[in-house]
Amino acid sequence: MRLKADPVLGNSSTAPGGGGGQVKSDGSSSTAKADPAKTDNGFPYRMSRSVVKTRTGPPRSKLAAIHGKDEPGLPRGRSSIPADQAREAQKLRLLRAAVTAVSELGYGTTTIAEIVARARVSRREFYALFESKEACFFSACETGLDVMMGRMSNLLENQNIWEPRSALRAAIRLNLQGMAEEPEFTRCIAIGTMEAGGAALQLRFAMVHRWVTMIKAWHGAARAVAPDDWREVQPATYIGLVGAVSELITTASVDNRVAELPQQEDVIVDLLCSVLEAR
Image 1 (cartoon, rainbow, N blue to C red):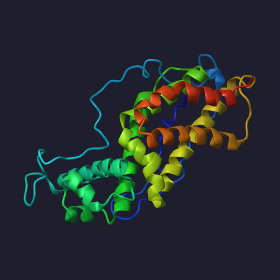
Image 2 (image 1 turned 180 degrees about the horizontal axis):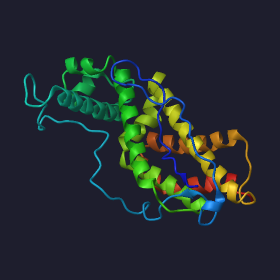
Image 3 (image 1 turned 60 degrees about the vertical axis):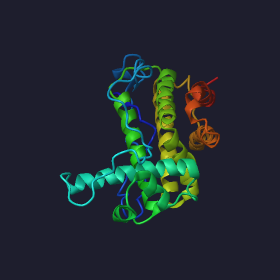
Image 4 (image 1 turned 90 degrees about the horizontal axis):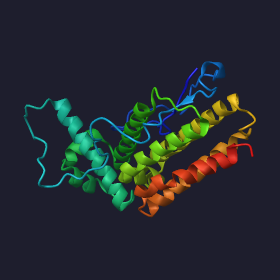
């Protein structure tokens, strides 16, 4: 039975009022038990060799954006655009603007006035969508994680890498590439959520938990087919390993080196394998 790769990024908790909505709270994985007899070489964790090198499809929309005065604003009053579409466009502008503001200024310094100015959306429209800065930032983080998780799922689904280390490397590479392509959003998750606290911080914890779940599932699948090659470890080991990886990402965010994260691929793979492989 194939064990489908977890995209590593997840979400959790319940949004504060005014625009966040409900998200999954357990961050758990319902992975079926691996059946080595039904795989090519006994390892049921599959990802594509080609997918880590090339990407297809239309260009991605950025999760961060500032709408300048030279750009057309959204129509006011009566318009040919349906009200629900206009509201969604306003919300998207606000979410992207919140990401740029928090990434650049920090959560504590960012104000609603700064967000609406960058979005070119009125304060009145802001409060029609969100009850507070916290609610807007939470929604931006939640939406961004959903987008990035969807990207990873599309790339990893129905692929064909079986060897454990190669499968791990493919997942790590895709996630590091995704973070590097969205540096402002990555900084918001790594730093902004810790500044914001509350529901946003719980969202960050849920993301870390998803990493733990993914590494544990991958390691379990590897041990199921080659127990002599992979060590049995305590559950806290996975948390410690993910904590180390998270610290690398946070440090890169603090130093404004998110674009260089793909260079840490070997470091992360070697770190995980040095602890989990039997030597």
